[in-house]
Image 1 (cartoon, rainbow, N blue to C red):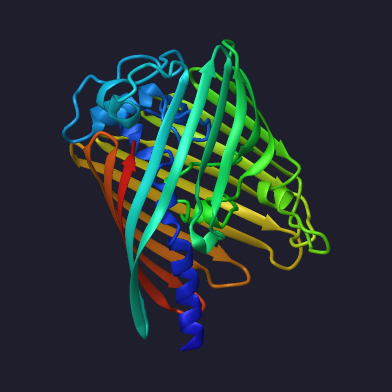
Image 2: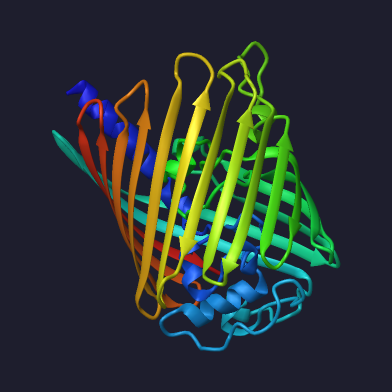
Length: 383
């Protein structure tokens, strides 16, 4: 019973943080011919504050929003006004090149495992976001309330400055998640949490990129994870390790993309040298349907050997603004018998910047054979 409870608790602890990821990039919009995160987000890796163009799309893609609201250009439009704007356009365009956002997410979580069940109400997110874009420069920052389970208090988890030239070359420096694979919105997905791309796994580093109509190359180097650097304590083993990632995306058609990625982390005082390599393929075979599949291999020096992760996310827009998702996930490793997950999700966008998300997880541990069930309902207000 103790082992059962402990395993279930670890699974639920991870899922507790799911709500923080729903503001991330949504690969499902490949069905709308949006293969790049920068189509809608300031961050090259997706997630966080929407550009004025992305705000307009949020209005157009919602169930009751106005069609044709997404006109403009994400890099030149200074502000989204009206319903799609900040605080529903209360400030109009008076902020000029400064764009603001507020992300609030009350949620209800319930879970069950052999021998017990429980539930709780949570405030997953309460964040303020800002971006200043002028000429080739973008300065970006997020600050908010960190859930108690992750340490609590006020926390700034992403801030950076980027210069992007008209020739396609760009450089970014600051705190951000390094580019790798497909950034599914749920950061507890196996291709994120098990490879070190969870909610608070940002690095303090530099990223160089080059973008064309058909290809995006991103290379990042960092002396270590942001928390490992900023929260280092004397006489405590450090998890700081040199980290570099590379990501190349090929847009074969407006609805087909291939992503190839690599990761290397040097040895730290708390972990061995490790790395990963992966490939992902996304396509939209028919209108309103997108299918992404990513396979990754993680290598670790020493006796821990190699592990494999396979994640699929299939999304279908049943009616305008109502998306149904199915995501089977598998992780295998030499030291354990692996884990499997089945994720079912309904994502409803009834109004501009208002999302209602209901998710159901079935997780099975291959070693203990324990099966846990988790349900999460979220109201997402992006103001």
